[in-house]
Length: 198
Image (cartoon, rainbow, N blue to C red; front, side, top):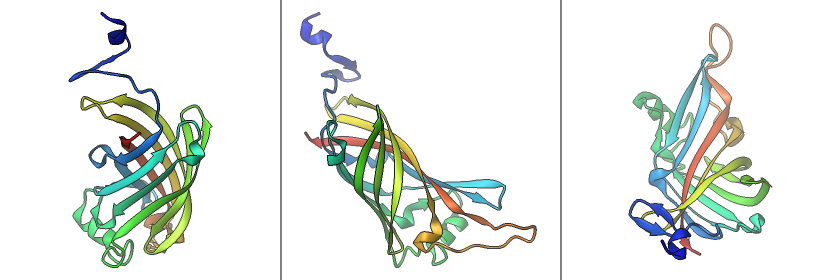
């Protein structure tokens, strides 16, 4: 095997050079991305869900992470908790008011490297027309050249938000004490990015 081939990574579909850097413009691969959430229900269980329609773009600067930025748009009505009645309630004015506010958006304002492969992304999250900052911890899961010669990068992370700060304040007081839905919502991110321009 030649020296060139020794420096290539074998992947389905052929031989491609291994990734040498993560700096460039990226687009979110929505079909391999999950933006989800969980909230405590009736004080004893959790409801989990996700948004099925998301898109986003950004720029990664591996050497100077503070130069990186990301913008994500979510179709609010694409919320999916695997229960049609609950999803309809989440779309109405008690929660997301999707007819009036069809999009949830996030625009980063800073990116900081916390350690090898770990980052904090701070940005403006807009829900129901209200914009508040949110802090997201992300971990770089890996990068690979896919069978089509595209550089793919994966991140996973989470954040916690108090939904009332964004005007999502509906609740129901339980007879036994406590409330139907927790104020705090855990946000969950599994992000697949594809480089569109080095």
